[in-house]
Image 1 (tube, rainbow, N blue to C red):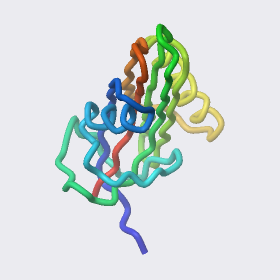
Image 2: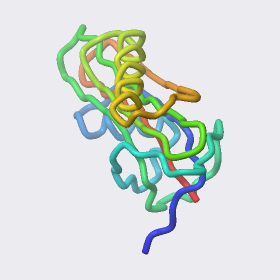
Image 3: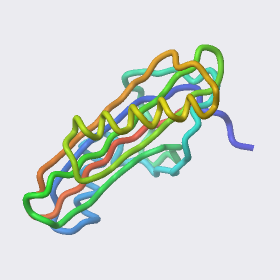
Image 4: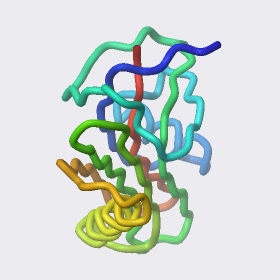
Amino acid sequence: MLPTPKKVKLAAGSAEGDARLTAFDKALLDAGIGNLNLIKVSSILPPECEYEDDFPVPPGALTPTAYGSLMSDQPGLEIAAAIGIGFSHDDYGVIMEFAGHCSREEAERRVSDMVREAFVARDKALKDLKVKAVSRVVDKTASVVAAAVLWY
C-alpha cells in the first residue's frame, strides 16, 4: 500500500527546445521538477495535506503529481498552463489543471473556475484556493507546464 502524501507545492515553468520533448523537459527544469519521476495523479488532494511554498524531493524520486502541459511548434502562438488547488475546511481538497492557447491570466481564471465547480459538485465549502500559472509565446518549439507536487 502506498503512503498518503502529507504536503503539496505548486510549480510552473516554460521553455523552448529543439524538439517538443526537449522543450517539455526544459519546462520541467524551469519549474524545478525536471529531475523527478512524475507519477501523474488525478484531482484529489488528500486530507490533512498541507501547502508549502517549497520542499526538497530527491532526484529520481517517484513523485505523485497532478499537472497540465502543452507543447507547440507554431511560432507566435501564446500557450499557457495553470494548476489550482482548492482546500476544504476539514477534509480532502481538489486539484485542477489546465493547458491551452491563451494568456496566463486566462489560464488562471479557467483553472480557478474549475476548482470552484468541483467544490460545488461535491457540495463542499471552499476554504482557500491557490493557483500558479505560466504562459509563453512560441518562438520555434516551446512547452509550458504547471503542477501540484505531492510529497510525504
